[in-house]
View 1 (cartoon, rainbow, N blue to C red):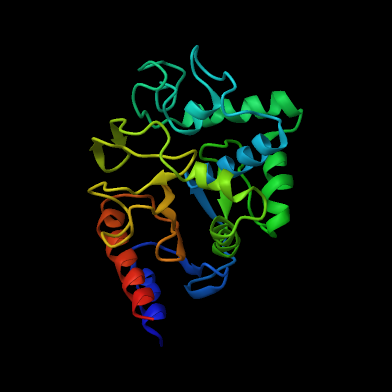
View 2 (view 1 turned 30 degrees about the horizontal axis):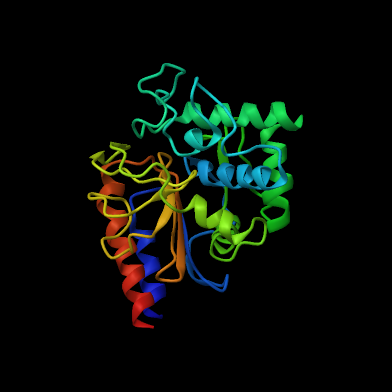
Length: 276
């Protein structure tokens, strides 16, 4: 067994009924995996990067624009994607002026879903399927009833998405680069599960690791690492400096077990890749 396969196999020891994980290199190859790659898992907030990618396609197609007004007065599509529109986590209550703080919000993504449907006449899940999932062969993936947290997918499908995030074919590379660069920098905010971060950096639908501590990725992941984790016990990260991505899905809700297990797992993957 290779060092990388040994590192990935550690996911099988997590205290969850089922776990599936994979490492995807920059050439799109699955370099190591563990668990049933075709098992469907609830994604929770790992739905957001999938939805964000569909929205990036819509922006390139001209159906939406980043500077288009959306959500509360003074907010735009960009504010909603970057969690700076001011919405509460799960309601339309406004807790800040647009752009003032990083307020992680499911509501913001659901507003974006409604906006896309109103602009195109296509339901959000249908649009995501046509724009992203079908072209990438992600036949087992859906955003479900919410672009924020309603998704289901498999490790195999998310591996295809992780390959796309390393070598985009559905959007221009410059579009993905903007989405994975910090939007509205130096905004303070709470990273769910990990507390207040003085600089709670996010791109457009993707969280950016930067220098956050504590964090759900590994201490050895580069600051450029981007991705998302979900309360369903799921995560996806892409480290462009390392030239690799990791997908991990489980059916145990996020909690102390994940806070303990995930960073060490990611550090093991990074160490094995660097040793190759």
